[in-house]
Image 1 (cartoon, one colour):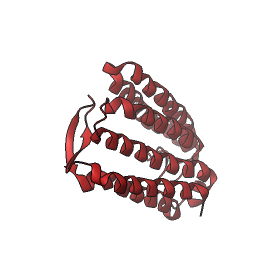
Image 2 (cartoon, rainbow, N blue to C red):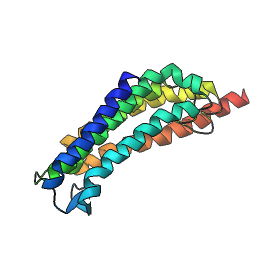
Image 3 (tube, rainbow, N blue to C red):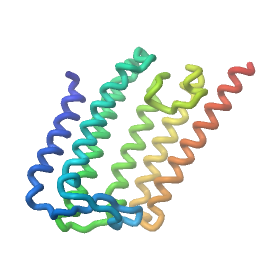
Length: 212
């Protein structure tokens, strides 16, 4: 088994262990969802509040490990597989981080949940840029538009610029920590622009290729 998969599984096992450890200390109903203002707007039972995130982490891990095996372009996935494997560890660790924040909150430690999560989201965006910049044409990973999936050239050009934009989105997202009132916009605007721009860009590049 790959070392990255072992690390991800260890993180998942730790998540379950944390749930069992803190179970007796938790109230019967726990806070489970927060709005962009950082205030609680959702609750669930103690069991699901403590074990839903580890279960989701396990299912996401299994899905991400399985996806490359069924991709019609699996040979292309292997060309950037080490970056994808690292992404698996990062996303599972991201879930653990959110899980720990949830537990701390329910233990009585108060903080702005959205601002606490923001740096982790920034890391996710930035590494997504790294992964996207290295990816080759496939059906599951990357900026998958009808035009990128139809051409290696369009895929490569779109993902080159997309990788840069995702990294910039990550850097701008972290700035939201210093501008609390506008934090959500520092996250949403860059990533929405990135999605919109790369979609249009892939279409334009495809039209250039087909009309040449």
